[in-house]
Image (cartoon, rainbow, N blue to C red; front, top):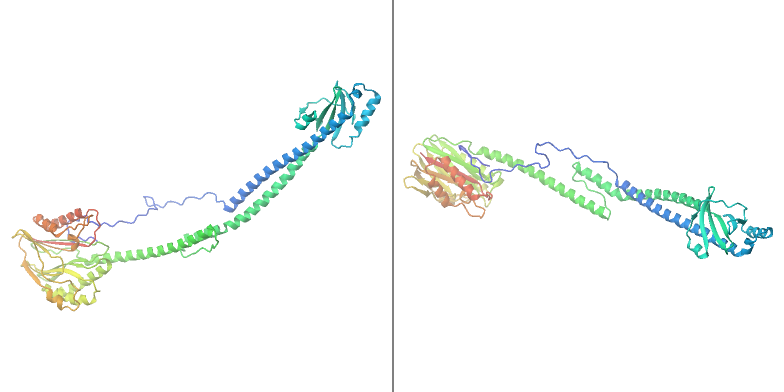
Length: 532
């Protein structure tokens, strides 16, 4: 807390500017960004089900295709082998001469020979033709029609010397197996291959039904499995929703031994950590609020303005290292012609130091009233304050009483930094160090009283009196080097022609230049009194 009471200008002080919290979750203009809109939400179970269904359908389709191809291939091979066998057998039973010299008797014998094959359901006809493609005999007695034929390649047919071709007789697919009877003619066995198409269609329909049933069953099984697997995820989603509503005590009940169980345990650990962090944050906010109140209260205890003393120029500055500090300065109206001035430093900082400082101020105000003896005033403060101070805590103080008529000063120093007096007559800076120990070290009081002495002197025109705390001379640069007493002496001597406020500003600016980026480690209090 910076408090330049009565100062005509403020100096930027190291550590004095407190950084403000920034809300990084908002845009620069402070408006809240709308939450991003979520797209179509598809449950994992449905995605998993769809994936399994697609895989089952693809697998079944591939298997159906292979099965149909193998079934048709097997049936086709069976028909081909049977046709080849019949064509070769018939060709082997027929004499070439019976075809070349056809008569009624020979034709009758050929028809009787072919009649043995009429029981085959697939057999449409067996035709015996001479070299001129004329029908000599047939099983069904049908005429061979001339249609466009398509050659069928089959390795066994080539080995047996049989030609296979396929054509359509009406809407019936027919396969022809031709075997030569020497050079006299040939035998043509006509077989219906309608069963191949029917088998293909039957297999396709059957396997399609099986594929559909398998796909539905697989999808249903996948849905049940996905539902079972995603149940912990849905539970975790409900847990997250509960935590997002502010219930940081909520714990997930997912106890599976897999990755989801580990995730649930991590989630529970996270919520416990968040609850602890929230509690700490609330405590921190409460502490910051209390510190803010303490800062406000402490600021109200320091002088709001400097007293106006004829012939004297005053300037004062205070800056705490934390929100509240342990340094203290004040001006006390002892009587109509006497003013007390004090600069004190409490051991320790923060709340404890500020409390002791507040107690010291109260004691000093009561003891100084109508008491022109600074020695007696400080003794009373020690006697009242020392018994209530914790071991290890103490207060150093420089307290003077100024007679505004004669400018006589009576100074006591209770273990504090020696005030500095620039004597215009001698042209040098003098350390004022009357004996005295800090307040609070002697709880009984006799030692404190015996060690305390008063130093008297009178301010002459041009004299400068500087009271300060060790935050000035012990201010450190980034390398850890102190500002130092000699530097303060030199600055006072160099600025002797300036006003009290200008002297104070120069000292503080030089201290700031010395500290650079180093953090302020102690409270800073500075009081300058110049005689005109």
